Length: 148
Image (cartoon, rainbow, N blue to C red):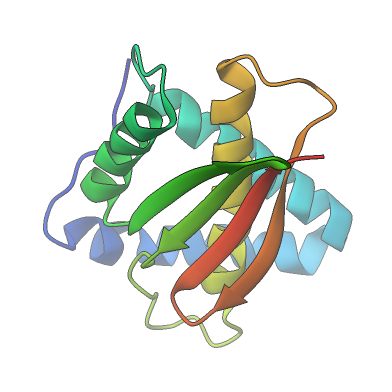
């Protein structure tokens, strides 16, 4: 299965204009709901490219997810379990795109993360009734929850 390659920021320089062009087209031609749906689906595809292997505990799942985020320079996650679901505390973020005047990339990657985490937990057997939802996004810390 294909995996993302890390190349010391080269991907940001090489693909930043392409990502920004895609985001601008979505912003200009899709409704907010359509754009969100596409970004969630793209996040699920990212999760598919970063499989969790045989992870069967919350700690092992976190280790596997962090391997993927490290390759992509997309920060790291700390997972926890409480009575209502799984807490997802994501720290750090991918490099900014210098020419992103409308700040489309920071908003988009939060939704990509939401889609990726949702896909990982569904692939591990999570119910269709459970959802990954954004709780907060302050600076480089994103709090999500997978549960009801």
